[in-house]
Image (cartoon, protein in one colour):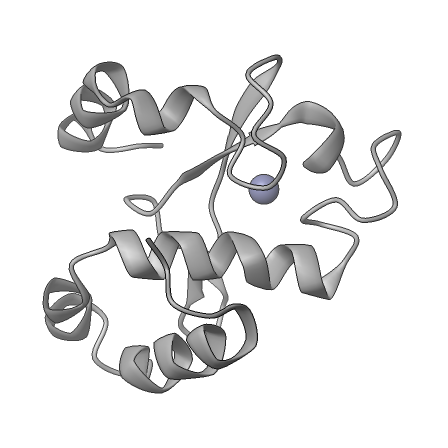
Length: 112
Ligand SMILES: [Zn+2]
């Protein structure tokens, strides 16, 4: 479930019409890049747009976000750089958001 606040943002923000991995605009689905807690519950308010073939675990590309660590990390990189990291630190304090952001920016460079 995506919170209403985020749904509204998704509806008005052009960012969500374009795959954050390929730049494609067809068959966009929303991917939740982050999980939290010992049961690994997905963090609902963090979503990125990905074209279907780059998302599917089965029947999609071998380098889809659910099949390939590098693509998975690239989606995380986009998400964490767009997110309000201070808000995340407060809401999900047991995860080291700064360390994760630093790690991803080291791998993929500065996010623009
Ligand atoms: Zn997904």
